[in-house]
Length: 242
Image 1: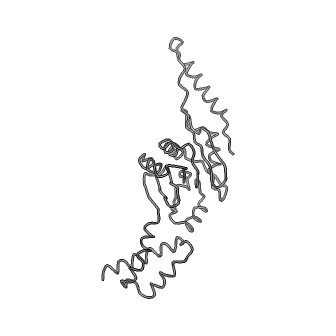
Image 2: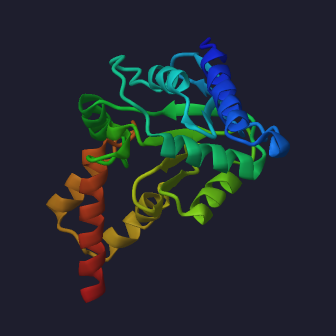
Image 3: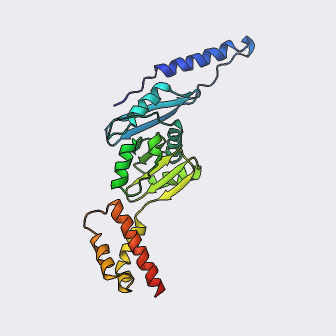
């Protein structure tokens, strides 16, 4: 378990208090309010590691904590790490606070280009130029109120928010404001209409064979899903022209 060392933060607090006292006339001298800390409690489902502690105070990001988070949120496939954008951590902390969550599970954080390319080949919905490549994105699961947390993130308009209800997680990033949902319903609907499309004669015999061959009992690959989308879209277009 990663343990946060509070000593650097104590020195920062001491200096801030001392500076304030020395710069204030004796008759007006008052103890300033202690800086508000922002903290996170996180669990990495791939490594089994935890981070629990402050990562930012009134003076800015806490260096030691950000270094620990860089390691904690590393690419678990390769072990490589990058400086994590404090903006995405602030975004997550705000979302957790909005729904009263005290702990979050991290499913994905930093990805190397090699890891992202591998996932793009095997997982539907992985962007080629993902914010994960730059340490600006987190895929998160909460124990409760998951959909409420996603909606709260979208309402904040602080970056990208993706919703994956069938997989039980949401994506947050500190990139441009945008929202998306990937629940598989579009593909499911097309598959349910498959026989209707074919019955209308929208596809040739050869195309029907190609389409049916691309429906193995195992989960479809990204390439197969895209091919299926194209074929079904063509079938629907041709059927509507009849």
